[in-house]
Length: 399
Image (tube, rainbow, N blue to C red):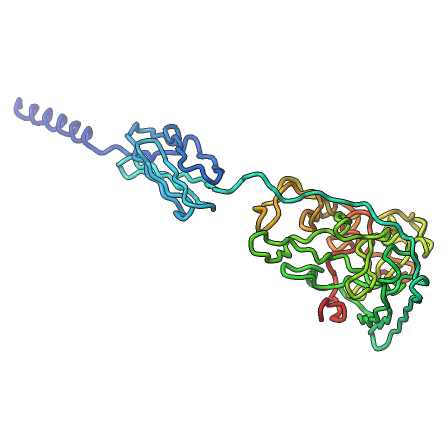
């Protein structure tokens, strides 16, 4: 019996020893303090980052740290103990991934963006001008007479004009010329599935429309940003004509002459609006857009669907962007957004009365059943910078 009890005691002790030798479950390390993104100025050379408090391990294991750079053409990296060293190669962006390994099969990683850029002071001229020259000349002084004719047949509206204004202007009368133009557009317009920009990334694309006096509405200025090293033109950044009036030499109608002597509007043609009797008490059509929709001057019904509602001035839904332009001052402009370039403005849905093409749907005196229409506004874009319908090819610039 004594031997049997000894055997039982031995078996019990052996089982306890085996339990003590069983492997414990390993807890993988975790991220205690995530690494922030890092922006470095060109010429920094090397930069160190302390990794001592980034990771933690519940099992108190010693952690081995490693790191990789997603773009070694921008920076290379190395790790010594808990110090990460970043070495500059060139401007650019790289994602740095740091991994902690507890040596027992548990790992965890954290990453951050590292941007290397040239943030030296911007030397690009960022001034704007809005002063306008007087309107002191008339077409009669140039022995010219404005002409405009409009016909509609087979769902096509045809307008023939000589682009001579029927109001005073600021360009010397010996420079203005009668430029015969024929414009066509659909008389049964429809909204397209997507908008068409007036200016693309490579060129001025379209004249927006023609006023009922025959002068074309052509807001885009052919002043793209010029690369200071190569001379290449960057149409992503085109000067806004109405905020660079010294460069674009606009008269009191925010208009001027093109090289061929043809007069055209870049913005708010107040003298023409006055001649039409615009006084803020009624909707007044001033032209046709290239896609066939009508254009009105500033004022429309408060309730777009109710011609009996009060008339008010329409507001655009654009604003100047905040912050600085992303350019380097060489291939693209730098400096704070201030309205110098068209790309300084952004559309904010619902900010004003109108959509991104400065239009809306509603009833008008000419279209009591309702139509989509554009509005000339006081503030940018003033004249629309995109089409909601499909512009006719006759308005294509350089066609």
